[in-house]
Length: 399
Picture 1 (cartoon, rainbow, N blue to C red):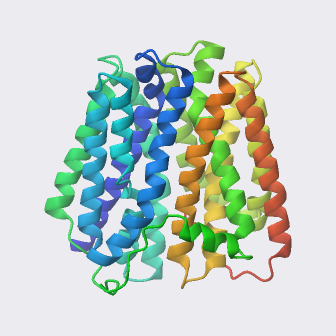
Picture 2 (picture 1 turned 135 degrees about the horizontal axis):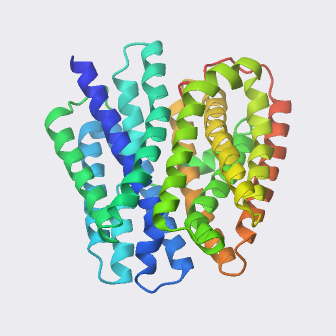
């Protein structure tokens, strides 16, 4: 069926993006360190991509409203493929940064894919179903990706990046030949496209109903990005783990994420707790997991990994739901886009801070992450106490 084909291509696009991230996150630090650079440079590569993504995402979103989803999505996938090819073929550190800049300069795959899924939905129920599948796709990508990355890294340090680039290139070809346009009710062509990435953030800062939640989300994103930026370096230093072993850990986290999104969220969390309770109390749980991971004890570290995976995947859903609900139907696109920008900023700040602290003391990044999450806990609790009669809305569509 036509609609099913559209949906399949978009889901495949998201899956390949996530699979690529799952493949490269465990092996990237080892590849970059082979150039003789410090741990800080490794984390800086994560941040430079987020910086360019932050700048490009609002423009690409506006451009897809103007000229359609299909050409912008194809451009974005092509940028991903080219960026990884440049990264894989690098013979100097500056070429590594060029590869991440190329990828980040048109990094609109995920938000445009979300818009695409909304475009093709016939009704509210199908829209919920279309968006709900993304959470499971993320989990599956992070299960398979690290396994593939661990295997491919045994061929050569650069081979995983050639492989991810090839996946993106094939994805671009598939989208070019099989993906039709769905966004026909275009923005007025005389309207100026907003290219200033700070405008949505300025409006968000002035919005009393959303300001605290946006800031809590920024703290959550910064803590999680900080963890991702130094994770491989930390376990290598503290426990002597190889890229293969780290890949297996990421795969295990992917299994937990899928299990949480598909089983626990509906049958445990939403059944026995309110959305506000989940939004508030998973912050201290996540903070506690950071402290457990900071001990020089492998058992406590594994327990911390399990808890942090449950906590972050649940928080991402309930925070997104609360922001979408508070923003309302007329502003939902803008507030969700603002969330994406905030996440990009946190992905810039988190690895930079984590890398700087890690070179001084490998335990400090986890301690800072726990502090940030407890501040977010206090802000969210205050926000929920002040909120009056929110409109109920299913959060399973946001995961």
